[in-house]
Amino acid sequence: MEDSSRPRFPVYIPSRSRADIAMTPRVLDRMNVPYRIIVEEQQHRAYAAAYPAGKLLILPRSYMEEFDTGDDLGLSLPVGPGAARNFAHDHAEAEGHPWLWTMDDNINAFGRLHQNVRRRAGDGLIFHAMETFSLRYTNIGMAGPQYMMFLPSREKRSAPFSLNKRMFSCQLTRTGTGVRWRSRYNDDVAVTIELLKAGWCTVLFDAFWQEKKATQRMPGGCTEELYADGTLIKSQSIARQYPEFVRVERRFERWHHVLDLSSFTDMHLIRDPSVTVEGSRYQVRSIPNPSFRVPLQPDGLTAVVNELDAEHAARKTAPWKGGRPADRNR
Image (cartoon, rainbow, N blue to C red; front, side, top):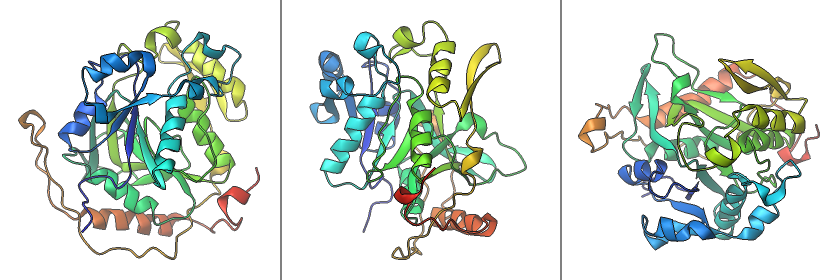
């Protein structure tokens, strides 16, 4: 019987200069979710002192040299995490996996929105549930959880998921799309746009969440080299690469890139007729650390996943008739 307390597909965490402070590995250890950390060769020794050898992968330099940074600065600056994500994609595909997870290294909690209350996840069941939903459709290219800060506890329930939105920090990615990560800055924006342009849908789950350290608030990573001068350069970079989708605005006393993906609202999910919806029930557990213990009810997460299906079917209009996703021209 399949273990629903863990994801089916491998988890990769690109990490840089955070051997002692990376948050995501600690969270996944507490959730009993296996993972591998991708590090640059010159930092392997520092990470080897903190993690078992079996959890570390060295990023080949060729992935950084060949990475499309979206600018002319080459390796004079860090290329960002996109090169490591491409390596993770190829590594998972070489192992025969049709999907993989990539996660930033500064995520400090995962959970789900249940009865309008944000509840922490104690194991990898939420990842398994997101996989279960994604496997039911032939044209999902990427899926993942919403940021917790965008899911405040409130009376009116949020929609369980949104289609064709930007995918943040924790991504379940199909390996067969032909789309590569690119851009030194905001690689998540770039890959989202490239997937949508190629005809693949993205699914942002509001039923599940991640809590991530705010941008530029944690040392290590690319904070010092890429973000020392604030957010204007990175916002201008992604806007220059995708002017039809991104503009730069000043909000909340700093510069932001504003993403407009409204041109992709006509794309809907296509059900895979070969996938049978299971009737078994997920069981929800509380995590063992008393400081994080939150009462959770074994309320049948399979029912929640099925509800996502039903809600999508009820609200969608005419399905997209364009054939296979890769054949769609934009």
